Length: 111
Length: 109
Image 1 (tube, each protein chain N blue to C red):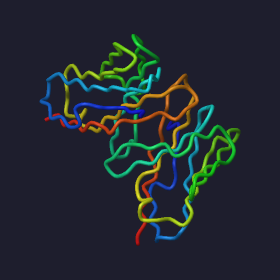
Image 2 (cartoon, rainbow over the protein chains, first blue to last red):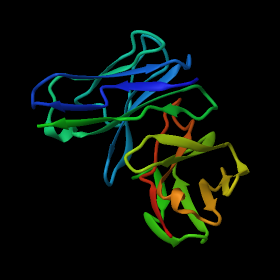
Image 3 (cartoon, chains in turn green, red):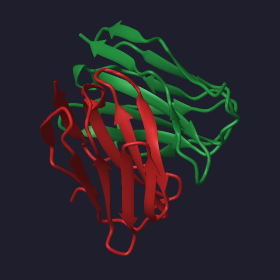
Image 4 (cartoon, rainbow over the protein chains, first blue to last red):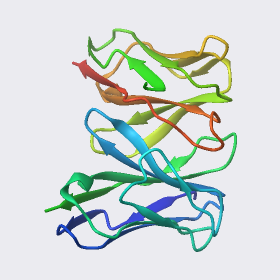
């Protein structure tokens, strides 16, 4: 069954710390995406990838890095977490001309 | 300015009433997607609609590419329809999927 799995599901981090959010998909999809969702802003695209080894900047990439070491895995990295990065993060995978599949989300709090 | 605009921002219905949700976009696109998000939950694809009208149960999606608009019609609403409905034009910039802020729907019994 097609799936997108995010880990952790919940995370509390300290300001200045490093945070890595992981996403795994078993769909053999080329495209993967990281979004954050905040009240009043909807879902905003942070980084995306066309395949293993590629990462592209989305609309709000500042403060975030991404890594796509394989077709299945796409990570979002916060090198120096700040309270403004407190949010719910969603990963998705997809291929052209089909609706993407979304993970269940990761709730991140930066204190 | 914002590339995707959804209206209304929120909507309250009595069970059984119909709803019409609108999505307007300023970018060119290949198709429009509609998603449903449960409160605090993940997103579920409702329609992948290149153009024209598509039906799924009580839901109907109509997309007019040339006019850069799409609508989602919900007939005979149920309390389980409550949640956020998001539209996302697809294919405007490579494989980026850009979302509107959404319409928060609440259906009262």
